[in-house]
Length: 357
Figure (cartoon, rainbow, N blue to C red):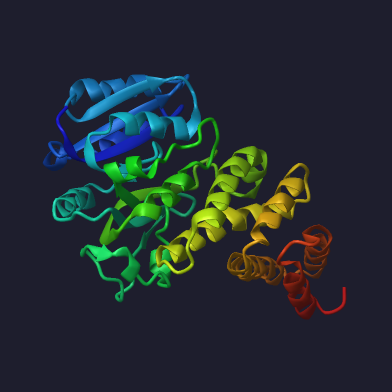
C-alpha cells in the first residue's frame, strides 16, 4: 500500500456486535485513495477478526488487518504506528463511527494543511436518550488555519471540551519523533496520546468538522468511578507516568503548558481524586502517593484544589434537597479526604453549605 494522507487506527477486542457499523461508516469512495484503515484485532474470542477480514478482502487497498495476542489498547496502537503509512494519524474506537459527509470534508481539509497537530469538533451520541450533541468551537477560535501553537488561547471552553483522543490528530512522524510508546496491558493509555506528542508540536489547526461520533451509554465502557476503581492499577501506571513527566519537563513559560496542565488535572487527577472518596484500599494509598507528588508543584496544586473542590462541592449541592444523603456524603468526604492538598478548602465550603452537621 502506497503512502496515504491519513491513517485511521481501530483497536478492536470482542467488538463483533458493533464493529460492522464502525467499518460501514468508513465506506466512502471519495476518500479511499487517500486513507488507510488499520484494524488491530486484540486477541478477540468472538467474530471480530472475521468481520475485519471480510472488509479487508473486499477493499484490500483500503483496509489493513493486524491480528495479535491480547495486550489492550496500548499494544494495538504501538502495532499500528509501526506500519502506518499516512501523513496524519488518528484513532477510532470500534464502538464509535465517523459521520460520512464530515469524513469527506475532513480528508479534504487535511490536504490543505501541514500543521503538526489538529484538534477537531466531534459529536457525542447519548444512546440512553437517543441524542446527538455537537461539540463546536466558539466563534473566537480561529478555524482551518495553521497556527503557531504558542499563540493559542487555551482558555476557550470549547477547546478544553475537545481535548480528547477522539478529537486529536497528529502527523505520524511527530508521534514517532516524540518517542511515544503506549503503555501495554493496561487501560486508559489513550491519555498518553493526548499528552506526549503535543510536547513537541509547533503548529496546530482547529478544524470545525465533527467527523467523529463518540457513543456514550454502551454497557461495559471503561469510564466512571466504579470502573476506575476496578482498573485502578492501570490508572496508577498511566497517571503516574504522565504526572512525573509533567513535573519534570513542563515549562510554565510555554503556552502548551496550559494544554498539558488542563489535560493532567481534568483527565488524570480529577477522576483519581474523586474515585478516592470510595475510601477503598489499595486505592487510598495510591492517591496519597499521587497527592504527595502534586504538592511539589505549587501551580499544579492550586489548579487541582480549584477543580477538585468544585467537583466535591457540586456533589454536595446536588444532594441539598435530601438532608439524609447530604449529611452522609459530607461525613464521608470529611472522613476520607484527610490531609490531601484540597482538603481544607473542601471542608470549609462543605460547612458553609451544610451548616452544623
